Length: 404
Image 1 (cartoon, rainbow, N blue to C red):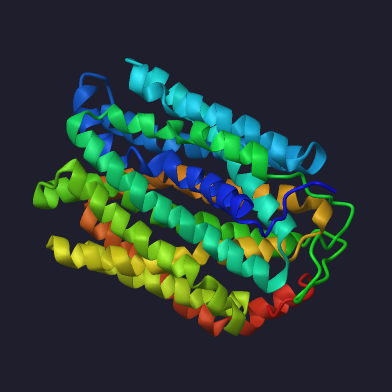
Image 2 (cartoon, one colour):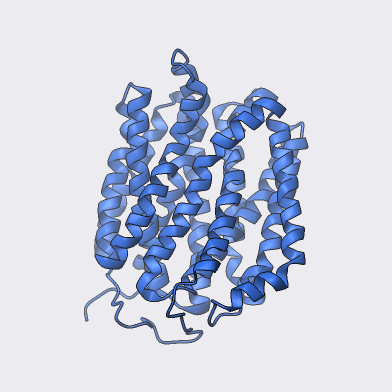
């Protein structure tokens, strides 16, 4: 059979680079938001509409992810990845050309559908290609690569936004550069064989979908992402009010969080080799909680940057933990749909973030919004640590294999 080896460097690069497109969907234009708001200041409720430019893709990722999950399970992984990469570049760069804020929002909606296809197909391919500890390691690497990509794209977006708020939209054309690599190095897995690779750490899957566990995983992911997205959505405004920060400085601050997120993700494989899925959760909540508390009470850029770094480590552990948890639990036949549900919960939190945070921040201020979020996360860390046995007992009814 003349098909690429999933362990080949080109296949791995294609999967990792494709995964980085998901973090680009919002982060790239985050530094542009204040200038965009100034440009469209004459529009009623421009403050809210401009924030939705960043988060409207998340709503359509929520809508598109379940559909993408059905497509990858029924029609295949690679076709969806190719089509999504094409749409990604077209919809993503549209903000550079469009002069209407609402037309830009429409383009961002199409971008969300493209991101759903990319994220679900790329993550499902990784779960298909790799097994056991190799899967945990690669999904940690995937999340880490997304973080590193976020650093690059955020920094580039911040620098370009200094010249003109429209320029960062051109970065989305990166997906078209990836297309030849995807076409050559990605192959459709043979899903009639449960184990595509022979080797260590092979595991069984449950013949039934573990619905209760999925609800738990999806719920935690939605909550944490709702809180996390206070950083890319609100931080540029927070820093501008606090320190009169420029778009480039805001981009660098968010990029620091993303860089430490990449570090946390890359370390996930080693963490998972020592701890089960449930035991990792209190560490995630603790890092995030300390980070947000520092951001909220920090009155200078140094303390805020420290908070962003600490929070980034927690975020970096979150997604590989949830992704490996789901992919190692569900049957192969519904893996795409289960990961589509995870993608839905991830971006539902991102979409809800400004809707929930805006009235709170208006009432108590952005500093207290960050501080209250940090306090909530620290409480969750304690609760999960104390209830670990109950959570694990709940999980044992549906988890087979692994060390969860």
